Amino acid sequence: MIIGGQRVNALSGRTKDIRNPATGDVVDGVAWGGAEDVDRATTDAARAFTSWSRLPQRERGRILLKACDAIDNRVDGIAALLTAEQGKPLAEARHEVSRLSEQIRWYAELADKIYGEQTPLADARQIGLTLREPLGVVGAIAPWNYPLTLARNKLAPALAAGNTMVLKPASTTPLSSIAVAEAMAEGGLPPGVLNVVVGSGVGDMVARHPGIRKIGFTGSTQAGKQVMAAAAGTLKKVVLELGGSDPCIVLDDADLDTAIPAIMEGRFANCGQTCRAVKRLYVQAGVYREVVERLARHVAAITVGNGVRPGVRMGPMHTAEQRDEVEQQIADALSHGASVVAGGNRPAGEEYDRGWFLNPTLLADVPEGSRVLAEEVFGPCLPVVRIDDLDDGMRRANNSPFALGASIWTRDINTAWRAIRLFESGFVWVNSAPSAHYKLPFGGLKDSGVGRENGVQGLLEYTEVKSVVFGGLV
Image (cartoon, rainbow, N blue to C red; front, top):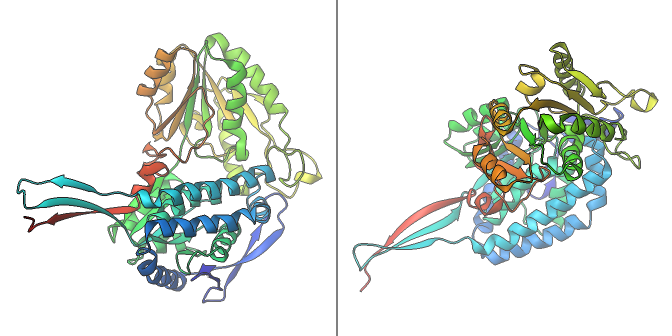
């Protein structure tokens, strides 16, 4: 773990092996912490907050920029750790590490642009002010699918705003987060500003700890509700980015040459283990057959394998349990009358025997009521549904407890604008792959979350507003 800027063992002395999902081999061991480790991390973070929060904003930004230089010097090593513990191809891992540094830099340059306001009052001898101040020690709980991306969405704005942090990475992917924290410490980030604690139940301890003022969490809806309940005991602020079952509508007038590759990227990147992935595809009848046929050719061309092997486009699923869940969802769709157009099985061969591999899968003619439409499918499976028109597609798209993102493909700007207004979601992509943009707020409605990360709004989420009346003026 990283506490006070140093790599430390758990006070209990316990450790846990981290295994490669492509091979089952042990990558490394990690200190396995508990309540006492959360306590000492929070204590160090509180101590660091006193000086970190009082630094001039521009100086905080300068320190964060130097810390990013240290990350950039270790991109290849951190990316190799990320691939080994998570499974994604090396190219995707390098991109994730590079984007981490890029986003921290963006927030570092915003550090001196956190402004309050001045408000005239009825008494001319008084002036009203609002200040924006850091919260204190904040907690972050990041999942395993994008360990660094979903940690950076929290740590970048939090540290830029003057807070200090206790980060709890997923228990299966802590190594890359520890490496990033070490790099930032070596780059000059003061001790205690960023602490990393791993262990069983640590997330719940962070959510309940009275010394932590806010929780940023990304994960499943069920886990998010548990975090919210735990945080309620000390009235913490929460930002929850939860599950998604994002619909994508393709209308007859869509530019399919652009849409097909974007949908492929939107569904099968990171082995389909992405919250904002295209998870339900609704295609208008006039292009339905062509879309299915073209998608099938693309799906069949995806090379599956160990992420360190050149040419691999899709690695393994992260755990055996996650693969079992997706296979059960596929089987349920078939029992309801859906058909497999591509994939639907595990790849054969010695290379795949020890890992959690599943071939990318395309399902056609999927009926409503199937689990692949009703639930979040967190794996490489794309169900395709035929629709009559936009109204039919919107009815089906919004018929979900999830409301994270949504996308539409059409050449008609009026149709696109109508869809934007009708989609029940926190983010809409028009004629675009569902890519992340850290300059724009991101988050969901309904069962997909509370609050927003990223953008200027994400920075302000890590501040508290203080109102001031300044009297005695002449």
